[in-house]
Image 1 (cartoon, rainbow, N blue to C red):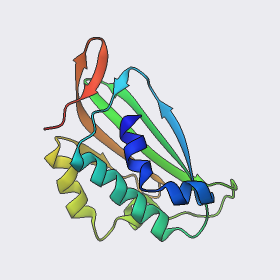
Image 2 (cartoon, rainbow, N blue to C red):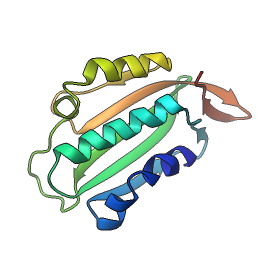
Image 3 (cartoon, rainbow, N blue to C red):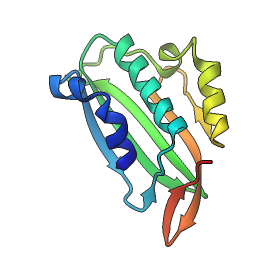
Image 4 (spheres, rainbow, N blue to C red):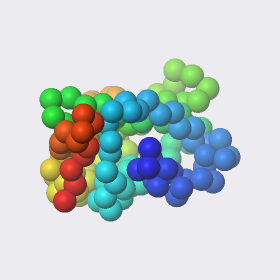
Length: 138
């Protein structure tokens, strides 16, 4: 939650205007440690996402532990539940894909972009910390 609060402080105007709505589906046992790289990566995703879509969006951010990794998922859809087509993840970050992949790799992670899906999945290193999962970022 600290990471999300930090990231979304930059998008306060969009959240207040209703152009972006945030839904958190956070497993409380997953503790995400913020880092400048991870924060900048999420801000970059959001800037591209909001800048390339022309309607209000609902962004769902979820995190869960899986096989010693933290799965951080960002999914988006129109807030009006219309079935109209949204840009998929590859369309949003097409030009920046190589640079973004390098950022993800620099923190020991992997990124998945499914064709035609409005979702980005980050697999990040995690370590057990007192029964909780904690992303380890160097």
